[in-house]
View 1 (cartoon, rainbow, N blue to C red):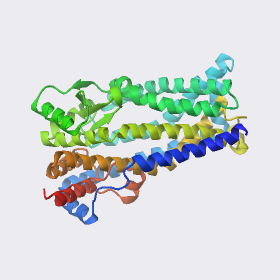
View 2 (tube, rainbow, N blue to C red; view 1 turned 90 degrees about the vertical axis):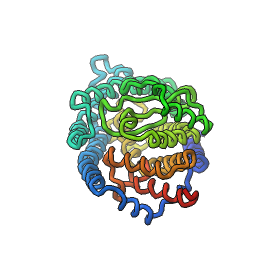
View 3 (cartoon, rainbow, N blue to C red; view 1 turned 30 degrees about the vertical axis):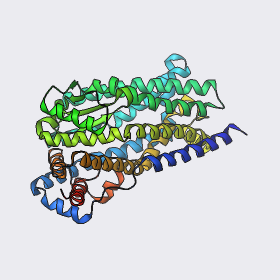
View 4 (spheres, helix red, strand yellow; view 1 turned 90 degrees about the horizontal axis):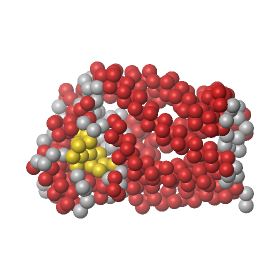
Length: 419
């Protein structure tokens, strides 16, 4: 059998395994959240806060969707014309067109040009967030975070590009197989190292000081059977007034992180409800689920790129001879951009299911639906969320249930448990 035949089989196998993982590890049954309860919850929210949240989200849509379209247009322009391959060749020219220079410097140049062309939309979004008072960092802080992001992306991207194109040269017939394994391994590696190496670049993390709240949170984790060495506090207030918490990493790098803004804005019981939600992610191994699905997706993408490499029409448009040469990188990025847009609704759906399960876990662990609902009210008000966003937008990109869905789920839990 030819390498292409094996690639087809490998892609089908990855697809089957991905479907099994999604079927077995994603909670497709969601907690009850009737529309009647949602509308009742919406009516109970302060009208002024609802109006402000909707105005804020409406103001974010133009830069958000314009930036999305502009990013896609730039990716297609660079990937489906000789412009992108020309940029890669230009970056390698001072080094005699060496493949390493083309792969690393050319790849970074293409990404930089794409980011530069879409930068005005990111600035527009920051201007909106600042105008509504949610941002605290100012333009200098925003620019600093942007430069840090570029630096981190450059290090990771250069390593990935060098590894990928080394494989294509050493195994010209079977690079897709080694590349798929390497891409999957990179996703797993990043799950371990991002919390300890990358997140501290953007925020300072300190252990929550000894207090009744810390004692309560550690006791909550112990009662839940989730090993937590500590709860960390992020200095999020240096750039935002938004409140949040999250869990990242797994194994020795797993951490539960709460924003310092959450500690300032919320009551101790509400903070406990948020942490109970994050403990749900840890107990149900949601980070591991995301890592597995991400690794499978990355492996499948490499194999799919190899198979698409025989599409002479695409290669001709890009002005390259082979999908495996560095000058074809803009074409690869264009394909990834289109795939990302198409896959967004599915990824959002999976995320919403995981978040709904973590909400149900928090309700069961704390047994306090009233505090859970109060916490959702506070999150919505402080973060200026639209508590009941347009259905099309929610289905396309929302990673969490809406505020009214979460409040309705809490009310359904209260009825079922008489609490």
